[in-house]
Image (cartoon, rainbow, N blue to C red; front, side):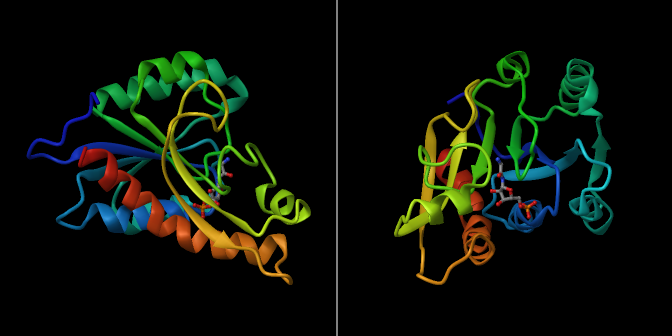
Length: 193
Ligand code: GAR
């Protein structure tokens, strides 16, 4: 793996689009001594992302980019990430699909968290689809990002039992709680290889 910890923490950018609860859990994790990463930048495509508040709370620089002009947005982001010497990108509820060109610029250095047991239920509405399929378990996955949606190498997964009376909402809540534990675990796992 290209990434190496050395003595300094790995400069990390977290990409969000919404609430940012995974961002918050990653920031808290990054402050632990055992964490190999520091969070140096928050990026969003959505100026109304609730998660942007964590920029102020934790004094982390934030940048917002308009993905209506995706090519331009991505080249501005690449410039920003290189300028700040960012060496790891964590997608955390980032709801835009990054281009092949963007991914090639950070090959093997982009992680994503997805709310299903991949390869099941790639894409959107994962909880509803898991319930409709009458699956007994759903869960979450942290994986490397490649140019195919939700298809890169899996790092770690956590199962969550689907109960008879679960709705997409109750299942989402249970899975999200596990996501907050799983993302830091995945980061510890890849850097202890
Ligand atoms: C999380 O459940 C994450 O797995 C999911 O969005 C939610 C974001 O929550 N991501 C995707 O669906 C990506 N395709 P958060 O903003 O509170 O971290």
